[in-house]
Length: 258
Image (cartoon, rainbow, N blue to C red):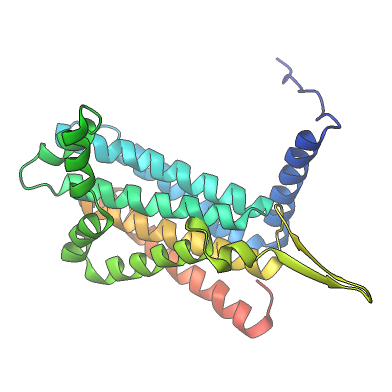
């Protein structure tokens, strides 16, 4: 059966935006092949994680399993936004990915399971339930669970979390001003803020952060499903991605070309 072809985008402003975003996505993958290859490997690693835990029927790990999928989806959304040029918005999604992984770990390591899982699922039952859930799943509390199990990765992931806040997860100056351009004439000065603004160095930094966040959250899920990670050799693949990311960074430092 022939694949159904969609009609081309229209000539209105919104259609033009989507067409330009699609173009930037493809161009970014070609302009930054080394980083894009790492993103492809991370995506495959997430798919392997989902396959590895698919038949894990432990009820207390149901919510963490669902959060793996949502974390993967957030990763994909972040790189799609970044490659199109919406860098600031991409950082906001990366923050969500980190929080989802921390939530999953906090639930999985509940010494009174399924207490935390039930609390999370019943968040909207009433005002008291919502307040209790918000207290239990504060960023400080879920991060502390990670720190108790893997302080090195927890510290690195916390640094990345703060980076996402600086560059777009909160309306801070680095995120807001990163796509601003100044043009001076003899009579005036004009400032323009880009929406689709895939500036090469800023995009490289963003995609590097995407890989680092993905590695960090995968290591979080490794704490939840250590045996399955070993069976699927995911622990080895994660370390390989870390080594190859360092090579890409070192190459950029030497040549200035990401």
